[in-house]
Image (cartoon, rainbow over all chains, first blue to last red; front, side, top):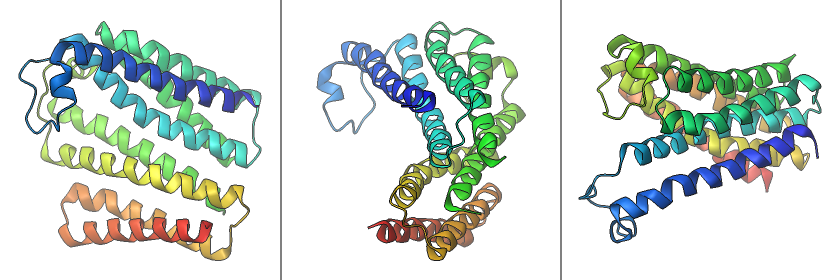
Length: 131
Length: 127
């Protein structure tokens, strides 16, 4: 398996981890009685800032992940794997891992800088597929 | 041009939408707030809110379009027809973004519909 595909698998598994990082404290704070309901009304107990941040980090990674999936898929289909695209993939993954504690701790401007690194790595991979 | 190129172009379009969302948010929100953990939600301008909704919609469309292209390419089922349909999808989604941002009603729905139908056709052709 190529570097890009390995990193893509790890990135998808990271999203599973992010789900747990969010869902476990969210259930503890707002209660499974609410989370298993149809959620017609907002929860009566608010969740903590940190849990809400982990939820936003989880949502944000869905966007990042689908773009990264396309970048990797296209690179693989066209057989354009290179040391550069492999490096971009690792940078993407490292940024997405670092993004979680940066968001949870509210690092400023660290979180935004880390997000930019992942965004740029994906853009460069997509552009590399075109040349 | 191949179906794969169309997919790359669409990926770049979504990246551009994200950039526009950030730039639009800066019209009403400070850089300090954007870089914070955003614990209290804040309102953005009308056009930026539209770009936000267009982005959410584009991500949904991408989650459906990308597998269709992958299925066609992996099974070697690409034809001039699938290329044309993929191009139609891309054009519809390119129109969708400014039309949503400017709040043009019927054309936005039409553009969305064309993109949706094109995706559905691609899945049928992948069978």
